[in-house]
Amino acid sequence: MPLIGVALGAPLAHAIGDTADYVAAAAVIAIGAWMLLHGDADDEEEKASRLVSAHGLALLGLGVSISLDELAIGFSLGLTHLPLIPVILAIGAQAFAAAQLGLHLGNQIAERYREAAERLAGIVLIALGVFLATQRLLA
Image: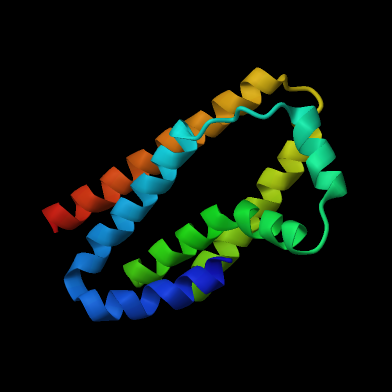
């Protein structure tokens, strides 16, 4: 999904020129805000039963919806003109490390901490977006 995002973001960056950095910062801020504000109203058992019974297009839609944040990050990446291979490798390494840590700690951490971690990730993304915009303004 990050590569698809880059494929969408890079041509847009070329088309809009210098404002691409601001659009990238706004996209990262929007992802962070979405992570903070989206409601997690469904309970975990209901989600699990929907996942088990999913098939066909529903399963494809589920996979796409899970990957939307990666798509948005790739889109922002395409806008920023960063070197693609090192960034994709860094994203892969980070995802691997986070998955391993999540598997190790998953059963030990209560649900309330999981939601707090999601909110913290949203705050970090917003801060990153503000940093990117501020850095561009000061350059």
